[in-house]
Amino acid sequence: HYYKEHQDPTCRLLHVVGTSIIVLMLFFSQGFEPSLLPSFAATALAGNALCQAFIGLEHGLVEFVVLMSLLLTMNKALGGSFWKAASLAVVGYSFAW
Image (cartoon, rainbow, N blue to C red; front, top):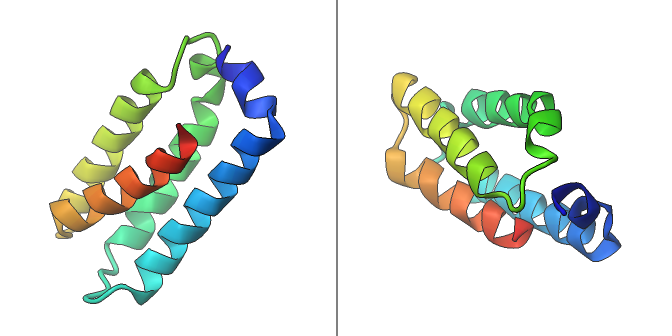
């Protein structure tokens, strides 16, 4: 189901739209935080690396929990705002579902 979902052109378009909104928010929102850049980059790389592990799952909840935990932990370790990182991720995942 999960792999089939990502083959759907509409689903892929929504991923691109969500990612674009995150990038715009990341760079143009009030109070830009440099810690968000490496946090999101590492999370994106981890998501790509773990993609095969998530393919057999019924939905993206496990992926969301794993990657959100990584993002928030890394951003906090780099001194960033929990709420800013969480809000960007929720916006992005809203388009993914």
